[in-house]
Image (cartoon, rainbow over all chains, first blue to last red):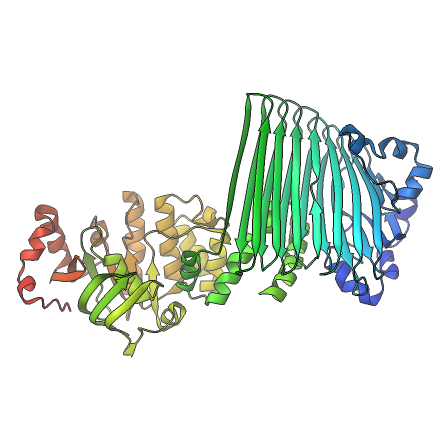
Length: 375
Length: 244
């Protein structure tokens, strides 16, 4: 078993697979190369899986190609979420991760996975599967990033999440691309009874184009899906980022919180909650700040119900920073620039991601680094 | 400390304040009365330098320097401070963040937090979901940490229950007893006068200062006769509304 073998290995092994020039960019997408704060790690560069190992028993992490060969159940899960929604998906993928957290396991330290674009013009296509078995709990942080050499490269990520009965998964994806990279994640999550799936998306660096609309299907009673996003949109970037939840069982609920700041880029915030069952609940909050004349934010919150007894609501607000807020902080002695910076940092509040303190501080550090270069 | 000379202030195309003259000396807080819409808040905002309150005539002089063209933060650095009547809500900005910017003395912050019952509010987004009384306590908390020499108070007690008015009044009075401090306070209810001692009051009606006098006596008179009576006092005829 993979985890049993890896327990004997020392932490920090992954660092041997990271070149000096790659360190900063990988760190900016959440990779801890010391592995000191991680329970398992995965690193894929272009189509090559450079590293994967678990440091604790009960967590499997490996190249999906290897998983499909060695783990019989892996085949059962491959494509299952897309088939459930009658959706097509590309099958010409090369790599991706297979992560499984065994029944009843609570994994305190996050599992990390990184998909890295290394070569110029490379078209990375991966298929990921994440299974959180019954009653298990885990945090997964995935960083997707591109090297300085990866001009005009692209990334297509297909992800399937299976969060079983009573399980909990907090999935935080950090994108750290370049201004000429195009990205298309496709993701479907199947959430069972009393299970919780929290999906966080953080994108603070320039990108050419991102189009994603992950979907959760909540088919067991009491399931919960949460989608949060923090987006800083740079000039010439298009981020068409949405999330969809289908409430298909009693007492299921979905919550979507989007915070976008446009520095001149184009953001489309889509959100869709569909209630197919009575006694369900959903809330959408889309907030956007436009800081330059050329920035564009389009919020599209949608709610739909097939039944009467549901509680769906949304709030959306887009605008510039209010003069009153700046003046208020100036009247406390902050300069105008300081006031703007504090308001933007407050708006991009990492607390909305529902992370444990250690991970929250880490993401705050990454955010701060990115904001410092913008403000 | 503060001299306002022949000040006229426009908001948009409308002149709100007309030829205002008054001084505020250190250690001598002043009280400003007046009906709603008379221009009291406009005066405080113009003194602070808020955008949209443009000086069409006259000067504001603070500590001997003309501040007409100074930015808000420059005025704050010189020792001006304002306690808002309706502070804005700022999402994601915690009260604690501002407190730590204003003071590097954790003990002072902790003491004041406890006295103003704001312990649970420090990690909350500023003014988000605060009740009227909580906002006022938070305003007082911040302004005392800021430690200005001249404090502009815009209805500090409105929306605050009697128990909290007592706490706030006591804390504020202690602060104003510090040598060298002063204040210009707007009040409608007059409750704050039970705590903060002041000998100088004046009334603003339709953008002009009318009569001056002892604030408690003026407040009693306003309560009994309304603001119309103020127009009949001796200062009306001469329009010599220089209050000292």
